[in-house]
Image (cartoon, rainbow, N blue to C red; front, side):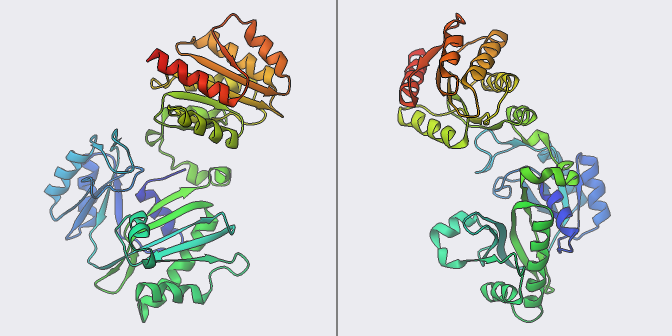
Length: 389
């Protein structure tokens, strides 16, 4: 789960992390009121969307008058902001963050994430603040330093010294860096974050180390422990189909292809998507119905797939272990009867009660193509989609 910048900074401030003063605004009037309250010589008007690259796309503007705050608020609210992370469709701006300006001396990059290789929280530090870290990694990887935190000891003094040395900080700034790492690590663990990115982390001209921007993602599996974080969820930033899928505990991610996929198991789902690409088409989604899906869950999954106007064909690939093939078949038949079947449908079933599942589909009278294995299924759905085109 992602949250907006202003929300991320509010969470970090709970742990004493230094950030500039700022106020969220949902209208032009609120933006003007916020600027007046901040009474800063320089004000920053920031569009709030779940995507990076806002500055380059015109979503972050530094102004010096209340009139300019009003002008930028009118321009941004309701506009579509297109960045390298939003895709060509962009995202509509519903919220702004009005923030006091900062006299920046230096910019750095700092992030924390879960290193699945070590099972530890790892920090990534670079002197190249304000830039995409992917670009830095590709062009100048020597400017990136990373280290892991041992959960048995937590943050130790040598971690702070490493950050200070990497960023060239001395004296009081080195002490601030040491304290900051500890607070960020505390926040990361306490709130079950999966990613925390500060870009840029800045040194101000008066010698303060502050988080000028913040991007935070949370482990969705741990949200039951954090109702305060769940309350920050902005559904307007999420795909409607993904929201609907979450209601049925379906693992669904919308993609931009033409073949809808319903699979049980993440590994099998990835293999299914790969083989669709192999035969010349692209998947329209990742959808894992899980190992113990009910008839209602399968029906909901089918409805979500068919709700995507880009879907030109559907491939159902089920290997029944815990999941029974007859349950899948019943769910598919129920969904087709309810929403219709406007596109070709290929079903590959294998495993528990496979013969019964195939019999249910065969006797349904519906125009469903059966497949013997995954390779056969992929070829048949790709051929059907290309034939329809």
